[in-house]
Length: 289
Image (spheres, rainbow, N blue to C red):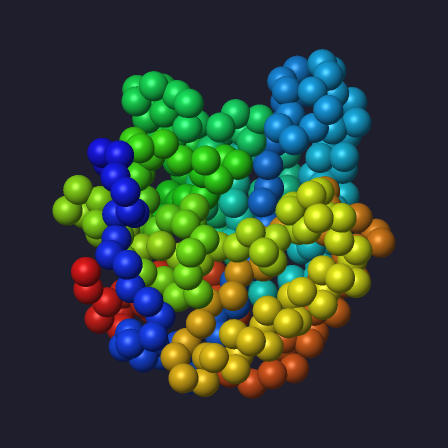
């Protein structure tokens, strides 16, 4: 994609769009996206203190893979939710037991780069292509399914990313956090769906940058849901809850997620979906450029 002043899609305000209907007339399509990531001990960790080795930054993240992710699995299972994992492909070799457990739960896996220690936006075209294909190929090799979606490491894409993703067989993209409904993107004449991700209902900015408490994050989830649920009576909305095991998965925060999901599940008209299911239903509704 050549540099451009707007995204690879038309500006379409939410007012005036055709009504979006979810299965069984649901108002909100809820998807939960655990980020299961790997940070090599001998590489710098983004947003950390920058020492090498970075024992503090690395240890808290490794806690997520050793302990926290299994708490998330227990909570989502209790509420009948299948996670859509934003997956670093190096997890396949670093934490295979985590993926084996996620596969038993029939979670979905989408590409999230090789490692979150390395963003791909500064790579050459060929190096970025190699990294993206390596990510898709390794996840497919381990799980038996090729990812259908993508979230860029650290949510940093290049002007080449979307073209490479189309070539790799990617069908939906989550970097654009600019809507509450899916929409179509035109990538060199090829179709790709933007599925709404969130930097608001996301434990990383909430806890790392905004210093939110667990109770505040729980309230944020509930209030986000209340508004989308109200608006969804007119046309369906998407709500993403974006999680990191080393943050929400610690003992003093995990019950906030459990409580928020219990609140959401107390409402009729909520479709518990995965990223691919949201994309597939949106396309089946007759979405066009």
